[in-house]
Image (cartoon, rainbow over all chains, first blue to last red; front, side):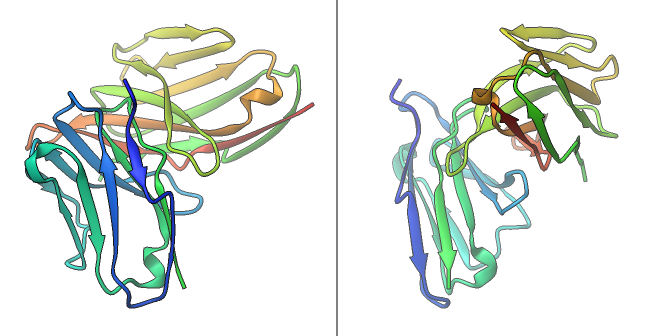
Length: 108
Length: 114
């Protein structure tokens, strides 16, 4: 069990730029979740994959956000035309008990 | 919308003291999880409680799930500086797509002073 890994761990970008984050879940887990956590808040659900199928999306996931999980392995979360309000920790999880270390995004 | 209220939001205590953190909701959850999160890291699962009235112990930590499965508490005995961190409770519910979604509280930030 190598755990869930996320890259990069930190990202600083300018408003309007696109960013992409990657999550590598535990290999035998077919479920993958993305959460977003802003300062002083608990994580909030963004989207859920079962294998390669994206089965659920939160209202928080605006049309600037897109997530993929090709071949049901790693997943990517892309944010287009970033805004300052997108600054947050983006967490990936495979099952309820395995969260990754997160990618902290700062939009200047 | 299912909400989880955690209290207190902040807690600063001396080493050796006892403390209790509360997690309350108006909704029933299929299970309730407690996590601890260090700055800049993801949440780490401490315990899952499933049955109403259930009590689980993890060394100096005692977790209780309310009879109605709407509330929970975390009690720490003889707190140590290593207990410092953000404690999050999260209720699990199944969605139409079959996923277990978590609704998190805002967390309790605990500081244990040596």
